[in-house]
Image 1 (tube, rainbow, N blue to C red):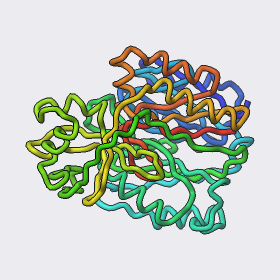
Image 2 (cartoon, helix red, strand yellow):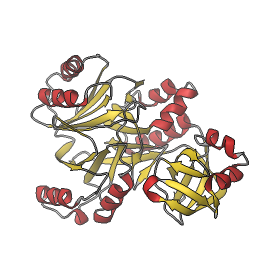
Image 3 (cartoon, rainbow, N blue to C red):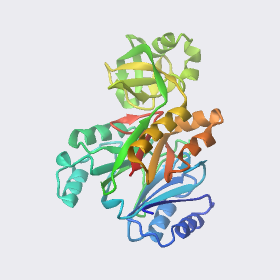
Length: 368
């Protein structure tokens, strides 16, 4: 096997990491990726993971729930290891202080020096970027915009969580733990790969235009030149007092090539509406209506299985709002079982990265 996975729910860092190491046996990884509950001390679990895999890159982040083939977990750590038959090479970089300034120029220069190619000229079918971000910085939009302006390589990933405490989140790189930071991994993939984006919503024939915005706080002051909460509630035919109860089932979507890129509302603040990701002034958004997450995810994955023939591994960046929806409807296990026959790890994110920053979406990396 070229990709293997492991899990542990041991309450101690050492116990969890040793259990995972034992599961991996004599497998020789080129890269190890792990997602760990925030209930593990971040500095300890990052250092311990690196100590048992000293000869390869070890990266990951804190979570709000973990995913592995057939299971959705809490208070655990899940791990996936890739050998050199999957990855020709990988280069890891960290960007610190992202809440103040997101400057990727030195990171991209490092990538170019390592691979001997310009980022603007790299083959997006050969190279794959993974991005893990502190989920409480509100810096994801700027980061992804800067990446998109400089390369055609896809960077896919998620925003780290902290089990819904909303206090501090962490990314892990080779034994260290970082907050207010992002890690970028640029991989030269030998086996071939693709990306799945699935959000399980129908698009309604109703639109809202953001006419007054506080972009720094992700706050919409006005939709359609009316107070945002009033315009949103009127479009749904509900009262402003009842608007927030519709946020999960009726978020907004930025339409690109007839595909929604979901913007999830967070809270009504006076007559304004705060969102989990940025909406720009003048942006037109469609109102969405929730569909069947199980069916939508299973269909998206089945199409990729039919295309690839076989998937050797899958990384699932699944929005915490999807996880909460599945929990409330009693469908968490049914969702997990979609991935029963595919080596899978993932986590519940504070937002997903793919052609920007989005919500209520699963962005998945699949390896041939």
